[in-house]
Image (cartoon, rainbow, N blue to C red):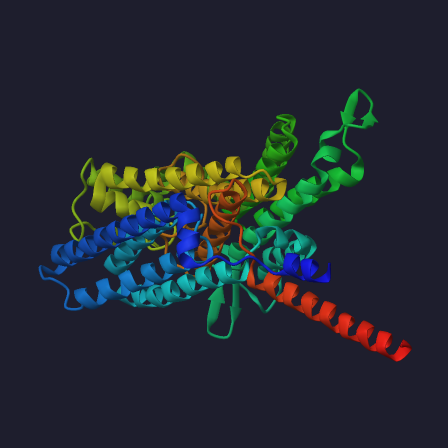
Length: 485
């Protein structure tokens, strides 16, 4: 019987041939992913060459080295997915690579120095992507550290407000400066809070949905379950007022409201969230000058087109110059827009690639959102479903907010365009987000039988220790029997 128990504890490991035979669909996905990655690399390389021809009338000297490094990075990311998340969606990584590549080409057009820094951050981001896939083998393990992630997210949001650490750059206090290093902790806080919200709502969704507390004619959830709503609302207000960052405030609160709506399946939470945020936004507009300035610029940027409205006016002119097909890579004037590499990189893309290029960027984000929501639908675990929805919401809402600000659909905010804008914090955090989303996708594939659910290294290690303890107990029992005899 003991031998049978040890056999049960022996983790099942498949050979490569057995694994391929058991997961034909997953291997086809990886082959499709490889083809799409090569296509994304080819598009990036051609765009880089055309941009150089348009601006300097010559092919860049280091084009072959650039292509080799680009392909190498993408292949490393692909091999990591093939090794550690073979069942993951096949479109997420290629779409991110395409957006990343187009963004890098535009940053190179704008500033060679920043392009060099972005190259370094690209290396770090891909390395982080691989590390997350390697370390997070069971995404449900993250739920055990929910309060740790909450503390990390809260500290990350409030850290820029600490005297001596926080730095005010371009009117927003969202940066932390440590010596020569500047970074945005809020970029990492959004991922940490998405994990916390997913874990919290997965455990308390039924209690939140049950309206057992009667206040006059209203039936509400118990106060202890409403408290996180008020805390999230409070964080959004602190970010809006204390850091002068409308975009991050809207992003964090939208993330929370969407996740509680999905968890409880009650539209009332969407309405309540909209009312709370609208009230806070109106109060901020009436009380704080920087919010009034943003709204005034949104309504009529031409009233002060040489000062406060200069940036948005120049971006609109650039988009108008681009027209349907664009001026051509390397032949526009994207430097006319201040901070074009950050907030207004979509205006630069629209100018040189036109409506067609801008639409391609929008379609890429829509496809990422579609893949993320498809992942949420495929999984049957509440935590994974909510996490996939939360991570997808971050990408989709962030892209909408910044692109909407550039085209004057919503008030201008200072957040980055995911995978496209210049910035190390944004790039690294978005690759962490991408790795987690792919891990959820792989987990769903394993549970529906598309991929054999093999044990992780941690599980094999735990099984080995347990077998060793069993053998040790057997030897002790045998010695005691001999002594008794």
